[in-house]
Length: 322
Image 1 (cartoon, rainbow, N blue to C red):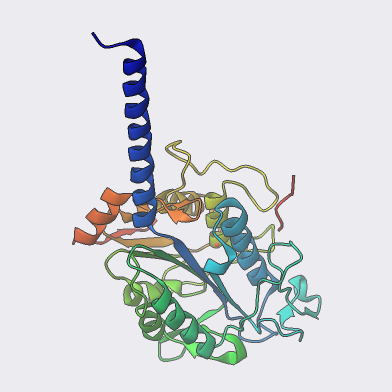
Image 2: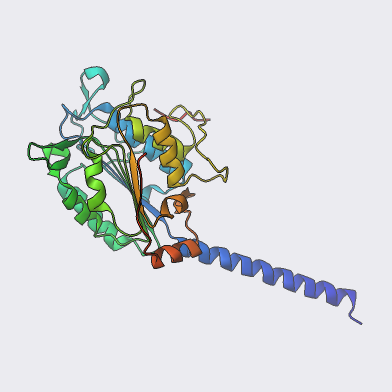
């Protein structure tokens, strides 16, 4: 008959073995789920066109990624207007003069912004990411400011110094990167024209408006309408820190489908947001979770094996510190 001490010893050994196995499973899940990297772009064109709301859009999103979603600073690339130049590069709200846009986006006393939003810097940023990203990582790209359609019908995005980039050129830059998934949010006018050239397997493309539409600023606050509400959705609060109800299924995580639905429902301007994703389930699986995308091992494996149809759905301040 087994003694009490022997039974206790076996119980402890089995418990420790079980805990070690759980730790190993969690570690493997984290490694395989990968990390989220982000690129935030606001070209601005020139100081006459670089509205203060574009800086607000980027700063609100940057604070959300850093403070709410816990993405490390070193994994976020910022390319905005003239970068860290002290020159006046920003048109203040209500055309109240010009200012030099702050390089401290999260109000922590440390500079965050160094790169100007030029073609050269954008190309180099994606080239560097292509060397850094693994096939387990995830890339989030956010673009705001001016898009324009010329007399020939071709659409382009304005970068700093009145440089232009067309959809095919942006798609080529993004295509240098081969992470597990790419999630792109476009807030500029005529953003929809970029959706098809950028779309590929394991990508989400969200646009504030269709190819033939303008995107609009908020009426009541110095932000852009769609991307403001989208950022509120993933932050689960507005720019003043007031909670918003974007978690539709109550699981504590905001999927890209939930973020899109919330932003579309709260968009009160004459624009038609859209989202394209491949495979069809990706938008419901992709979340920001403590600095890592909320796509588990099985989900990531399924995405790599999937050749499902694309899905199209038609239907972008400071945080109060406690």
